[in-house]
Length: 526
Ligand SMILES: [Zn+2]
Image 1 (cartoon, rainbow, N blue to C red):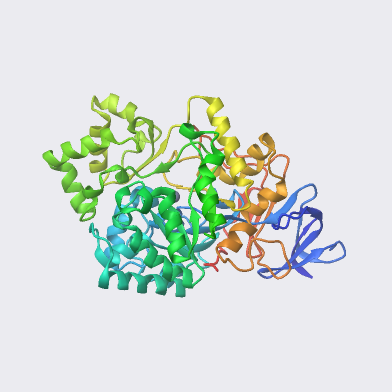
Image 2: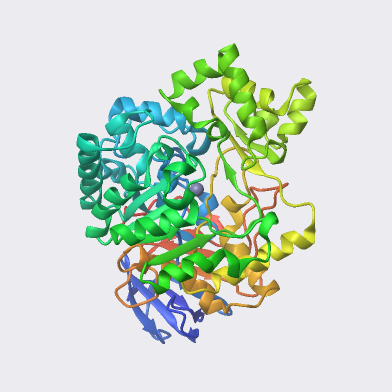
């Protein structure tokens, strides 16, 4: 007698092996049998005839740290078949933080993580994990966040971590790893992270390496003079070389300016891999990104944290300096920004910055500053997709080509806040598995599933997950391989995908016939 039998489907087990016809029997939280169970009884039988039965997808990069705390159902993730998300991304998260620092960073990050309750205990990684364990629909893993570590040691101060502050930071990273973090993450476009130098990151990563953890990095494009080789890829590789840590590149792909240049993008990384640097990468299948525009401000403007930032934006002479910086910045083209989320001005969601500026009769930079002040920084944006469909298609093809490499996995970079978010929050996984797999048949179904399951599980040490295997946790997705497709678009981004009727998390049915069940069975893993 089983609790659940998933019968008649083709089991694609996550390892990349060819699918096999088999029934899957689940008891309690775990998979107990993969065989012919036609004679066995079960409290619930899910008919998967004609469908694929695969391990639940592991999202190697999601910004749900805040959202999950007020929306534990997490429909945008679970309806895609995502059963585990790795948080703490870009070093932008809440642990470990003292109560005061939690309130400060919560406010600073409200444009990307939203506004979770203000009175939560985030003083340790253990406390952080307790807010999600068996309280949300998906499993969560955590990267110790570089931003939190710097806040706890130096606050919003432009100084490298050295001496006692560095020792304290190392202690906090060690404690986080001991309490179950899978690694350490940073984003070097953001603050206080970008005030670090390569030497600081090498020292912190030596601690991570001792635990076999992963260094996940959004590459440096701010204060590039402080990074080995000018930041970017050379710095990340040097950190791997000097510390021995496993390096993982966040959202590493092509965009309109370098579409088609897959080999060129990989050249330095492949060379370092041949020399023994342990590298993996992740990406999402869209041509533009999304983030919070508070990060557009020049590095010095972040000193002192939210109150000081607001003062600076209001001060007439400082304001001129900031506007000059915004207008000169090549890396953050203001004319391509489209608002996805604003704390107060909901009516501006979906409008581009140029449209809002024209309406207000003001420049792009001035409009953005005025909005940042009015919203207390709580704004998210995405980039506008290329006008050329041909370019867009090339980027899509590049994405599948990257993913065909065995060192690649999928990370949605989802920011599921606002009424018109970047569509990746609702469509990333089915877009790869349905639309792009059919359009660009470079990778088999089994290969693609492996990149979404076993690959991230092994890389991040998420035990007993990522495979349909006896004894593994019952994280399972049942989908229709011929019809699975994303429906979220840039102009209608909160549409759920189709072709994913059932999702199980820890042996419990979380999505039943394309409907969320309300079951909150996710564990804080590993
Ligand atoms: Zn991110």
